[in-house]
Image (cartoon, rainbow, N blue to C red; front, side, top):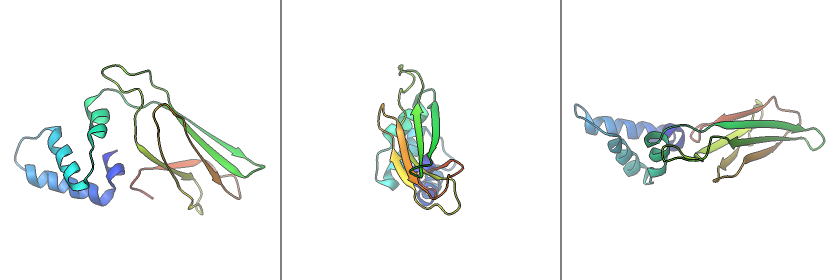
Length: 140
């Protein structure tokens, strides 16, 4: 998940820097978070809080439909996990890119989930795509 948010090049730079700075030493998660934030210039507090320090994971329900008349594919995703407890988030946040699963498709739609809202995206296509493909934020 961290690699998809940072992108391949920055992720590798962060990991190599982290390993170099802490070789032969003891580390804690905050050491990695500090390197990631220094090299990216962004805060990753929310990332580490939801993916490392709290239990559970996002449970999702995904849907896909095709509107033949308008030639539109619709993708929808909803998080379905139980409401938050002190050990678990009710809504996880992560960037998500989607595209129709077609060789010729290049119209990606990048979406960021908003708290409590359904993720949805529409794509126009000449023919019905077999289904959506989801890729990490740093991937094409």
